[in-house]
Image (cartoon, rainbow, N blue to C red; front, side):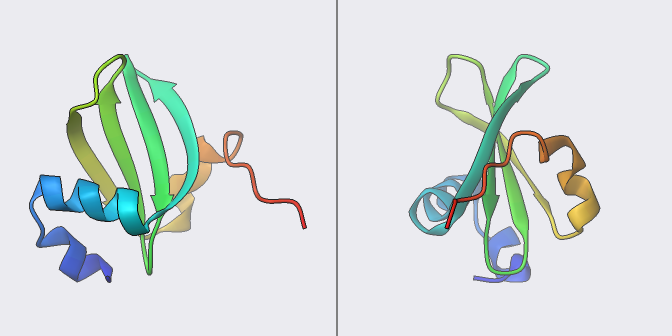
Length: 80
């Protein structure tokens, strides 16, 4: 699913799609929230939840690699 199609989905469907199809890259904490980074076809998604809660507050989508800067220390690539 591409960026434009994904943005048309309601939050619940976006969350399900990420968990089922997205490539989980990293986790980190910020401002009392737990963030998870996913890669999809032509974009990235940050899932924001309050620490200790499962409910998704929002999903921040982006396509520009520069937005990955805060994630660089947390991303672990597989060893070949």
